[in-house]
Image 1 (cartoon, one colour):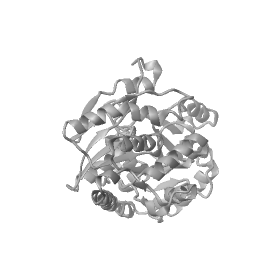
Image 2 (cartoon, one colour; image 1 turned 90 degrees about the horizontal axis):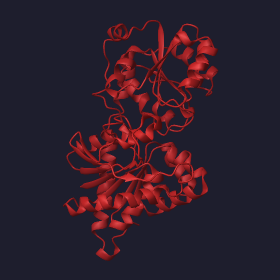
Image 3 (cartoon, helix red, strand yellow; image 1 turned 60 degrees about the horizontal axis):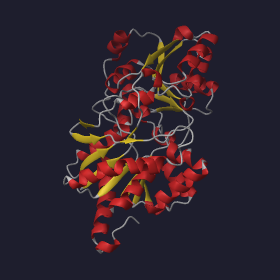
Image 4 (cartoon, rainbow, N blue to C red; image 1 turned 180 degrees about the vertical axis):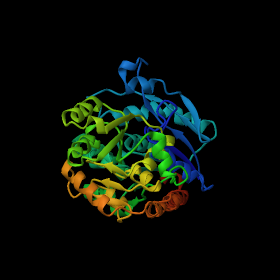
Length: 401
């Protein structure tokens, strides 16, 4: 089977962790030997590389083409109009990628299916491109695209149009599938295929050695994620006055850092909070192994890969009870779900975890139940069905339906 993977959420040499969950799922799918794929990963166009422009400047440094893990990736530029361009984003993205996809086909890679990730704007743009190139489209919903975007009237209308015209849909958790059904998408057209965890990258290490290497002592928790309101690092910092012997590491970058630093200072816990900045995935396993627990206080999560990464290293978690997270933290050896998403709720959950702390080996065994095998097999089944059903139609009827 030949796929064209399409998503603005895909790693690149400038942002190697950007959308890494899309790349990881694709790598495991390709490892089956039954699929090949080329990737079109559009990035926002921006005229300057000056650091003062932040993420936009960083995207401008992304190469036009690169190869990652043997996968050919191209990065067409599309116009992003801040604040007012939300409803135009799918059309702008589709128009920017037509030439590149046409080139790929002309050079002999006549793919069978567009494998799109993130419903808006990427999935909507993918269906536009599917109609233009007469190719079926499968869209994977990943979280905010379903639990936030539909709150906006015009994007919701476009999202529903894409859902009605896609050949198939995948959600990364059952909760997102149920939400899509609630929006009016027929359930028989959606399959829930949860993300897995890279059990070769995230492995248990000598915990004492890891702590010594990182200079850690005392009960230490780690919170991983971009420093923005959705990840709610402020709630975790706010729990520290209730947990006088606990230290906190925060891995991530984002616009809230100064605010979070000020909060830690105002609460008198700055000496117990360490901001690690950006931490490469290859290094995260050292921090997971050294920590006693991982805390995720997010307000929205489709499927939080960081939870499984921590568990795969043998480190249990404390997490907010939102969206797909209860499907991840579903046993005592995995960790504890907060009863309420507040600083008090975090403190209570950590106290409960410490009272009944699981064996590290049991936490690792729990994570081993989340390999990528089932997800890979589910994708193969879906793509095969779509390709086979399309092949049985007369040529004039082979349109995305």
